Length: 414
Image (cartoon, rainbow, N blue to C red; front, top):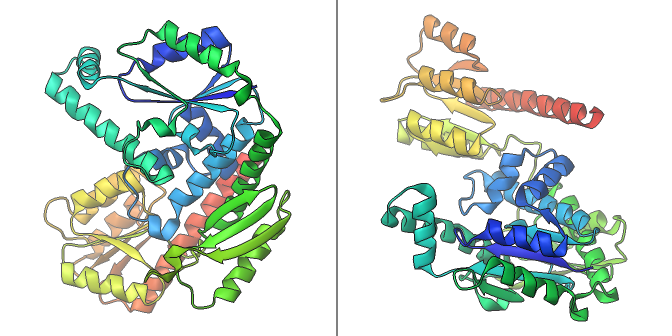
């Protein structure tokens, strides 16, 4: 039976339309939250981190962690498992990840005139129309970023992306559901052999993507009847060695009949391919108002393969902790505004898993006692040898990895 994938602009009567489609078709509704939940259970990545891929804001640590790529891979696997069932109504962002050659999916768009959307938002949220317009524009930007990432188009409501588009300010919910019900009865979108093969290939591609990304590789993946083509879009010094490694990883997976590699257009650009080492400390945040010092420290750590992000005040550190949750924070004690002790206190209250290393040139024994009691991993002088600091960072990272492994083991046992 066909699957319905529905993508809607905000304040376009989506909830009512979904209810009507459910009533008329009897299809089971699948939301982004359900897909994210399944992806989280498959990957052991927290749901909030997976759901972040729907945002148009990428983590400052993503180039180090590949969280976005890993989350997308597991979302595709969750979708692939979902598509093994029939009679589904998949609404939201995740449904747009379904491969376009899966032909038994009816792709539906809901959109409305901006005046109608503004009026709906202002009435529902009890806000002014200018504020409602700003909110809608912000949400449309999020939709545009998502569709640009997937389809390389700037207009998320472009008609060519969908089988049917409905202006919800001009079409009643009941009528929309009636048209959709008639459409899914058409033989053209039945689950025929070619579409079933496309689902199987989508599943294989998801498993290949996960296997590669978990080994630190990010390449283009195409699967046709089990034959896998991997596209390398960044320059690499030892191409043959990389191709052999990629083939070795993908070739052992179930459903893969063959693996070929090729270089894409991006291969000849200046960007260099880099395999991510997930065992290395990856999300290091340096917090210090002495810009020259902290920038130099960041470069010295990079020479020891410890890359980091940098902020220059306590407020920025707390904001980044909320949004990106670094693994290790290296924190100056004396800063204008929110000082290091207060940052440490708040971080440990809200994100206790972050390991904080206090690095100061002005700390007393009393300061050290307070910081350790608040949960700091270590209290060091800025005169500390860079290799000793690197060793401390790696020790903090090892503590984090052991705790994460313990949580995974408990989830598996549960």
